[in-house]
Amino acid sequence: MLENQPAENKLSTYMLLFVLITVLLLLLATGLSSLYSASYDKAMRLGLQSNYFFRRQFLFSLAGIAAAAVIYFLPIRVIRLLIPLLLVGSIILMLLTLFTSLGETQLGARRWITIGSIGFQPSELVKVSTILFLANYFDKHRDQLRQFSYTVYPAAVVGVFALMIFMQRDFSTTVIFLFVSFSLFAASGTKISYLAYLAALVGIPGILLLFTEPYRVRRLIGFLFKDFDPSGINYQVNASLMAVSSGGLMGKGWGNGDYKYGLLPEVQSDFVFASFVEETGFLGGLFVLLLFGMIAAVGFFGAARLREHDLFLYFLGIGVTSLIVFQAYMNIGVVIGVFPPTGIPLPFFSQGLTSLIVNLGMGGLLSKVLAASGKYRNSIAYQPLDSDRDFQEVLYE
Figure (cartoon, helix red, strand yellow):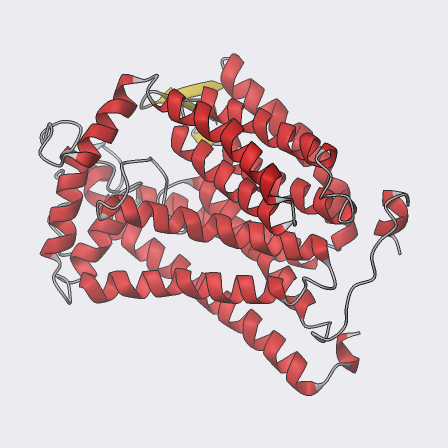
């Protein structure tokens, strides 16, 4: 039990939790203030109240914090028992989005289920459900993962979900989903040769599919040649780069940015970081980069402490940390022109109710991982599970 561990072990656990929770709250507070500053003009141009985007984001942030608290106190065995329900629910929601009138198309992509004024993006749930599924599967089959037959089933599940996300015309989310899934396969100890097969199986068709839509080809050409179509496909990125560069070192001051006044499309969503850096400068942008870097540091460190003790939580920590941080750096990379435009939101900043709640919920999962990491001394090795034992017996030990 935690109470029987040395004081320094408990202290390091409390420090990890304190750092994570502090960083998450700082990101949330900074994101909310940035969203309000970036979005009030667009809200008024749409005939809405100036605080429309902020008010919705704030209310759903409260729901996300409540979800994180519930997840943190939920027993691990209950979370693992809910995994099949989450997978089935994800499949149903994706099918409803693709093939029923509940699905809504925005900006050419069919990614949302809309009921009234509330939109829900099922692919956000898919990402978390798949991380939980892979963590559970890799833990259960930890002694058999070097056999190719045991990689087929989880690879097939990942492949089906990736195809469904791609069918929603959401290529960027498909890439992130596959990247995080592949990271978990690599962390599981799957043979390098099998990983190479999986990478080729997904990568080659993925590259070919990249060229099946003219707008993707134009985005790629625009990324490689910045002067190509500056008033069209490259307009957003060029405006974003100008907004970022105009902020200088210290920025123009909160609320004093100019590019949010119709010069930067999707300023409340994909390009909110550009508006934030314009107003807070290079130092403000560096602050946000460091906050996400701290999530990576405490997340991977806490997960690593569980590598020899609790593989489910180890894989869960790796997956959740990878998803949050990779999404953040990919969005920031788009804003500063390092990556081609992707449509990936910035966690805790971009307007998006599903993304906000899911990211806060993942914060609850990661807190659970860090709390569990303090129960063990690094010198204690795990006892391998008998692969023939029933899953329920393992859960309720």
